Image (cartoon, rainbow, N blue to C red; front, side):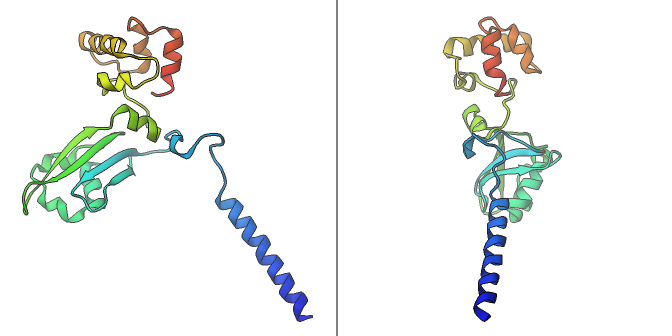
Length: 184
């Protein structure tokens, strides 16, 4: 009798473990490798680097500012920031915040933008108004000549404001636009 009870408990535990294991390993994006999942959900993906205690890529709320990122990753540095105005800068998707030690009492903060390759790898939509020539060249089907044409067009006509404006650039036809649109 004891043996049957142990077997029943073992069987129940196995079924429960299998159920929990399969529920915890559900595949949301079938067919896509993990590194290439599309950016989904609210918030901004930001990379922190430099002399912070926890460098890396983080997702922050849409209304988060630089001070939020510093408080979460290096709270002791907030009082040492030389340019406190930068702390109130609102974070944007694809920002890079670098913390640089100037001396024992002060740190500097610079805000940059991730290159297009890194943004594509993380699944962060590209912004045509924040891209440089090298970013454009990293996109499939755009070489140095077309990248230069795009940059010249933006310089003459101002920011694109939307990806649809890219269709007005000479050399970008309907087919190329459809191929590029998935990155924006």
